[in-house]
Image (cartoon, rainbow over all chains, first blue to last red; front, side, top):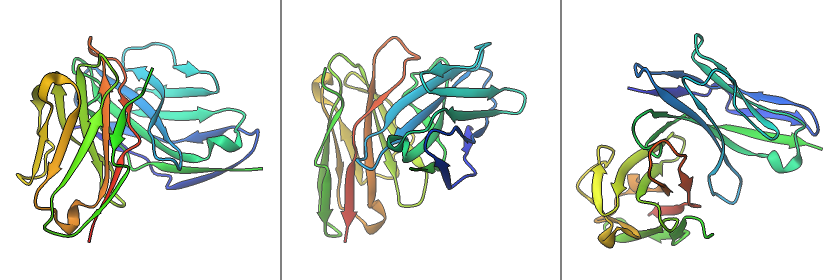
Length: 116
Length: 114
């Protein structure tokens, strides 16, 4: 069984600073994918970034990067140069490789608040 | 391109009533998923359609929940009869074949059973 743990219920960051949102995972699957989604107050879930378990390099998408440490089973999201619009709930999720990545296991989420 | 759309955005019903949630996936996406987030808990997988076939319904909580995807396009999730513990946000997501592409989520339907 897969499990995702997000230990930070809430995080605060000053605008323009970087912030790291923690995510650890547990799985017995040899191949898997890790995802981060953003949920603003409007409710929709927005895909941010994906990391495959066999990817050698950390994934990056604009201001988002995923700090993947396989041995530690962690997949932290780093947001650089925070903006007020980054204030939202952030979910870390995992999918099993070889299945459609829509079947995901989610963490409990972290609420990020960006202060001006 | 239109995203995943869900109807209604909010629904308040009484215990024992029936509610039907609808999801329109992104056009051309064969995979359609339903998820649910009960207050204070994680988002949980309910089931997965590939076209009109149920690929995996291991997350469906009980037989009061019925999902359909006739014709392989939109999907409905019916709760009958609704119970208080069914309250939460129901998300739908879709993805393309081939596998291993990310899923795109709708905005969710907030269901409140009173």
